[in-house]
Image 1 (spheres, rainbow over the protein chains, first blue to last red):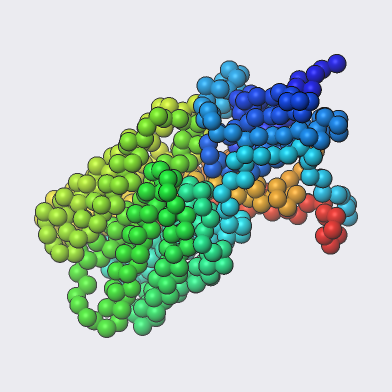
Image 2: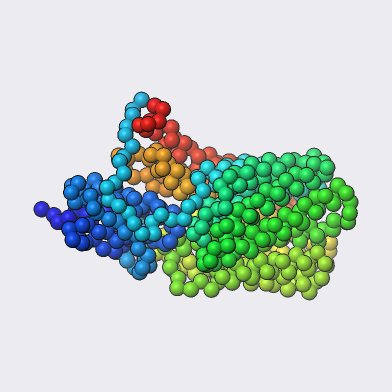
Length: 106
Length: 442
């Protein structure tokens, strides 16, 4: 059976950036997924401060985790938005970068 | 009718810098944009109707009406709408008052329409109070924007917007003075004074506002990360300074100041174009329709600088007047192309956020992206139309061909109308198909 972290990553792959059409894992916006004392913690960022989806995207990530994980695992889970280190395009998965450069969307 | 429960709030908590700066409700910028759309159509129609006058003199009443429809009812209303949304985002601080933003739109839009119509009807007695009302609305907007714009940080966009907002007030003050002079006849309103007003408004206010917003939006849309942005900073600092010197030179008929100002403006605008090239070079994303609009818009800026330079060196007053008319039209086209291009990015984003908040985005099936909120082919047609319209308008003025200018006006009116419809239909359809939410009237 997949671990909580693996299931969380899979759930986050369903969250798309509505401007770019690419999921937030492929975009490199997820910095860390870990369990701290049995509690799931996701650290994520955004492409730029003040980006159009700065309010909705972390909420979407939280909702996706909520849908994927059983209640006892999601209850204390936390999505933390961090700005350090700042996101750079180099953090994207190669496939995502290729899709963006050639106009293909996920 | 289906009644569904709104999705429950996730038990997963979100923390950190996710709250974002509080932008005003979507209805604030969208009200300005809707009014600007009507202003754009009116500008194109007015250009069509005044085309035979436009090639005779830019000071004829119908032509003055057209210019004010374009610069005030279309461009200024749209840019002010954008700034009410953008300044809080760029500076990380909200507007001083959402109510004041609504009052601004409520006063400004009818005031500028009355002003333009009064010009067309040759009623200076109405132009003056309408201009005063528009000026009051602009002062209110400047006060409101001073909330976010007084925040520390914010970088190049905020520096530029401080300049732009200040020069909006200077331009509007000049406009009110000129409007009352038309009625009272205090002084002779010479062509140079009108040119000073036009250049301050088009370059110092609208141009610098556009550059400032673009310095944030272009890298964001193209995922173009540069370590430093010296050219962008130069653009938003030198262009307004140059515009002020140029206007002072024109007002005082001081050739040295005029040429110095024009030189500084040219360096500022060159830095703006350099910044555009740098953003495109560093991009991590393919170019899209927006960039066709932006690049075509930049071409009109270059045309304006070239035609303006030739006009300044012309010794024949009639030729100079014709060239300055074409230069001013090229500056308007620079901004119109940029505005319609960016509208296809900004309006869907604001509409998407509003639809999301209302629960009007479908939850099943493929996700709705920003680009799904308008029809792409229609947008391409719009680009073709406005580009042709801009070429005809500028070319017609250069060649003194009224019919050509009129055809340009018709194309611009159609392009603006199609843009407004294209950006409205999809969000409205989603809103109408929205299932009733539990707790609301079903």
